[in-house]
Image 1: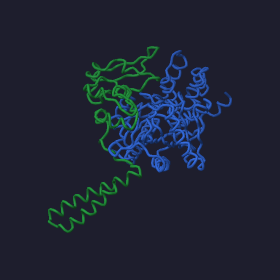
Image 2: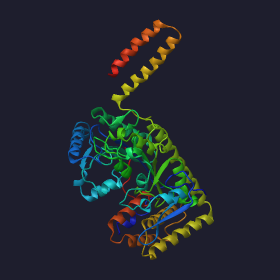
Image 3: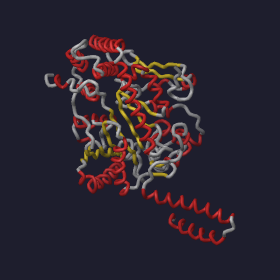
Image 4: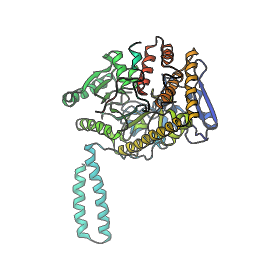
Length: 168
Length: 342
């Protein structure tokens, strides 16, 4: 049976890492690929009840980040990139803007898409709908210009301006 | 013990263990740092805002407000065993609050400002989502959430950003585990984009109880997550039933299982060192054999012996006793407080 590496979840596992408890009984087994087994510090693999689970520990794995990124910190809650990399936790809503690139790197393999497709708060739902209508209007406007239907185009422009005023 | 004794074998053989489904929506309030960065002033502000909301909308609907660090430990444990609070909150309840009514409610100031949850037995995920969605809509009308059009609902942990939804199903699958092996089964679930834990929220399965939850929260809708998990849970239940049927109708296999139970039980009784996994794996195969009708209490490892084993295991450790009783309740081997449908 082929097992995937439990850390990178990508390469085929070829090494089994045994974690023993105090009585030297096997507490758990970790199936790792050769790359992860060589690069991940042992302390990151050993977890107990009081420590963070393995998926959080993954954030503390050595990662190639450029110097500018690692110096970043959120001006609102003072969370630094180092804090985020170590704990996997963000401090406030503004962190999402500050660490945008880092967050993308983290979740790009874990989520099917990097755009929200779920529920939207009512106050934003209307705004989203208006934006969608504006996009549609712009397409209609382009089509009118291509068809040289200037009378209809002017009507579309009027409606576009009205919709844009709702967003201000 | 005389009270405990008749409670055993309250169930008719042939029934499966409980399936527990829990749904939670993580929400943060705009302008307030997330709980891991919030100072006491922010926490007080959060508490006041939610308390006002509670008095206006939830108190008339008979919801309870509980300050978790002021309630006795046995009440906290009850909340934990009812799946209302996670283990981390049981261990550290300071500055945490709970609004609840039956098996739905809002946990305040845990990983995110609000965790709106609902729990049920069975796989009626649509209904519990409707429950949490109603609560979510009430709050959303009065408080602005931290939300971005690109990222969705902003959560302190990036893995939950988007819908902020954590949908988990806890299911007992001893027959499938014995057939395929736990590790192989976990790998298969992981390949299906599910996060697999044990019921204590740790890695690795104990007592053949799988606690699987959605890994994806961004780029998928709430209904898609629900439909996928429901389909998956139903399939697993069906397969477990089929394997149990096959086990029951195959005498050599049945004998093998009976022997496994007896060997495990005796090992546990004689051994001076045992892990939680050893105990729960034994209880799991014992429950399986009994539920399948293979292993009657009058035959082989008798009820009295199981009682002795359990008594020896928990000794004076009341929390271990509570955990064992809770697992036996989950297996429906002993009667106890049942989750009821709201």
